[in-house]
Image 1 (cartoon, rainbow, N blue to C red):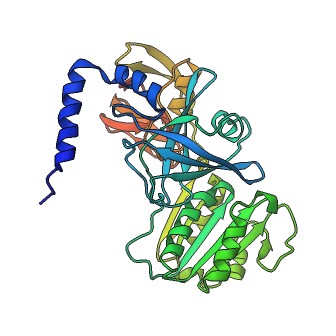
Image 2 (cartoon, rainbow, N blue to C red):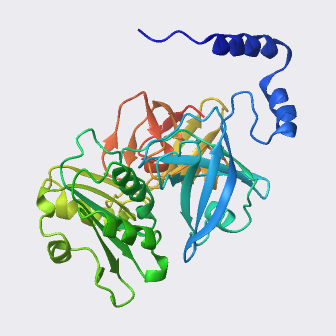
Length: 368
C-alpha cells in the first residue's frame, strides 16, 4: 500500500489547484523567476552553481535542479537545453557522479568542434545561468548483483558515465574487482586522472590504465595503442570472466562489440556518436506528409529523417541525435523506414520512430 500524502503535501496540492485557476503556469513562471531563477510551476530547471576545468578542452559543471526534476541514476544521461543566440539548443550529457545528498549533480562536458552547446557550456555559460533539464535516461546502470568482477572501457567523453559508476562502487567499498581502461589521444585530455589514481591507491580491487593513442606511455599505469584483442589480453587478461560496460565514439563501440559480444558474462555499450552505418542502396526521394501541419515534402532516402527535415527548415525536437534519449520520437501512421544503425526495415504501418536514426524507405505520414 502506498503512503498517504502528508498534510503539508495535501495543502500544497490544494494551493496549486486554487492558484492554477487564477494564474496559468507560464504567467506564474514569468513572475516567480523574478524572485528566484529556478522557481516554476512545473518546469524542470537547473542553475549552474559550479564551473571548473576538467581537462584540456573540457569543463565540469555543477548544477542545482529545482524540485520538479525527475532525477537520474549514476550512468545515465540528461538532456540540457540552453538558449544560444536566440535559439533553443538541446544536447545530452552524462552525470559523472551520483546525485549529491543536497540534490546537486555534476556533468563533465568536452568541447566538440562545431558543437554549439558544448562550446557554449565551455566558455559563455557562467555560474548562475539556468538550463532546462530532462529526466535521466540510459541503461549503463549498476545491476543489483555487484559481486561479479567488472571491466570498464572508456574512450574520450565516454569516461563520464563510467566515472559515475566508479564513484558509486567506490562509495560501496568496491564490492568486486574493477578494471578501468581509459583511452585518450594525449594525457592532457584525461579527465579525473588524479582522482582515479587516488581511488586505485585506496582500493586494492580497483585498477586503472590510461591508454594513449597519440603519445608514448611514460608511467606505470599508462599503455599505448588502439583497442584490439591483443591489447585487451595484455591489460585485462581475465576479461572473458568480467561484466563489461563500454562507452565512447561509435567506431570504438563497434570494435568492442565485435571483440566481446557473446564472450563476456554481460556486455552493455553506449556510443556518444553514431555507430558506423551499414551500407544501403537507398536512393531517390519519397513523399513525406506531416499530418499536424499539413505539409508535404520530398525527402531523400538514406538520410536520417531528422537531418532531412532540418534541411527543409523544420525544427523537430531533438536531443542526443543517436537514438538514445527518445526526444525526437514521433508517430508514424503509414509507410516504411530503415533503421540506420542496423540496416533493418521497419514496415509496421503504425508505430513510433526515432527521427535521428531512421530514414524513409517509402512514402510516409508522420505525426508532425
